[in-house]
Image 1: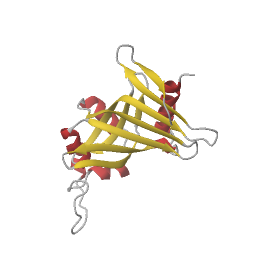
Image 2: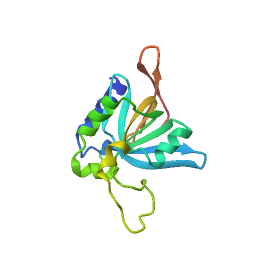
Image 3: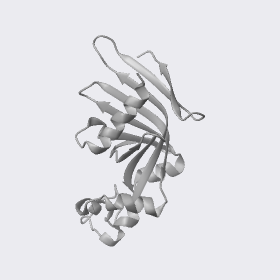
Length: 181
């Protein structure tokens, strides 16, 4: 059984199944001020290249953190199967307008409003939130995450299981190691 392939097939499934627990991900960054975590939605998975896709606002705190360091940790939890998946790697914004525009076309009109605020995410609302839809696409950012390591944990009364995976850059496959849970 190839556990890494199974994990990536589950990640791929989470991109299309809106009720899959791994669709909502803890996205953890670091800056000079320290670590920060927030929930994001998994938008895409490239099994062959070990990459995941997320959307964000270009003015968000995570973007300034990525300027400090592209190192990111992701945390997935499935309460139904008692599985935890931790991924570490690098995240960076995609700059190819053709690719970004293709993602933008998938965003429904009601969701485009999230990128149209005049103030940056996290800013005080003051008198309220003002939108300018002509700015929405400009603020829309596609983040790509390149996985380098995975740590999978399955909690089970009969005995926990834990596996570590390191991406072998020579072969493009995962080197698997059994770990003490």
